Length: 436
Image (cartoon, rainbow, N blue to C red; front, side):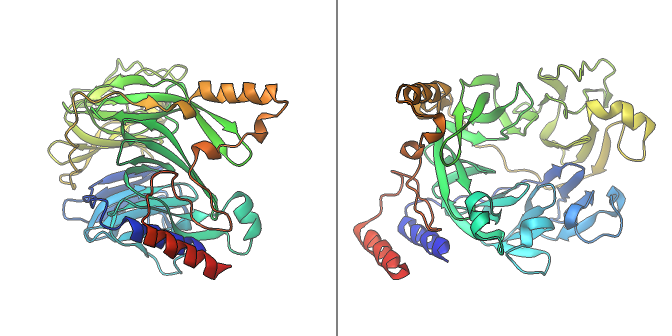
């Protein structure tokens, strides 16, 4: 309750200062061997492996494409995790199926989760949602100290952790001013660390190109690889970033191992990339190498968006049709097990809902840049300072680069971002006094 009260307070203080975000359409999603697609009429289809009800009620596992469940009738956005699916309907209501999605929402499925939602990101043990007012809410499994203190209540309810956000991926968020922030939240205590500037969008922390590395998109539409290291502080794992490396120009959609450019070309890399296509068939000259799959290769043309999974890639073409492309690494297995996975491109639907168009990019935008406080060089300097002071690196605190942290289960607000008015501060002080 304390967390929610602080979240609601920050929302009131920001009311009227942030422009409402527009609805986003994302018609396809995958996770492991589970697949989702939104038809042109809004019906959300789910098929494949149904871990903990991730594709809805079924007596057959895996559920074949021909018997796909219809989870929602008026969907516009879908995302998926290993045991959970989440979708947003035309009214902005967020719904969930399976796994941890409903742990704090009762027993009836689908779970009605939140309202006025723009996008959602589903993880293995938690979910995060971006609302139209720019706030980010998260819920799921507690961890660390929070789990130790709440062993009889291992799941925390929706909690606001950020505001003034325009794009979300897991615990990574892009702020209105182009700052990339990473959030750590254990169910009670939150720390948010600014990592980069001049960022338009962010993707996976593991992209399959000399991992660990994450993908970010510049404000000119370019796609960049950013290496990182995890370093332990006294409270959290501290993300330290290396220098960004440009991969592609004019990118309109990307995932951990695929990217679609403005000319409709599908590019891919990594162990889960789709097989190269030529004349509508798998290219026999595909240079896939399981030992060295870091290179970016051109897969096919005429693609609007694509999402990979373990054994195939779902792709929406420019004519609105939905196709599945075989994974390059699984081709030998598919030739011997055709009932499990496709060995050639296959059309699934004639018309699916089309994704939202990419925004207008700024041609003269500066490239994404790592903040000095989050760079590998800064971390190495802090380690050296600690050694000089006969301190171990575990004693270093990251609070100077993090938002102010309120203990006792209260929400963490980003340092320097919220400029609350005097009445708001007085109200906050009154609430805290009431809690003591």
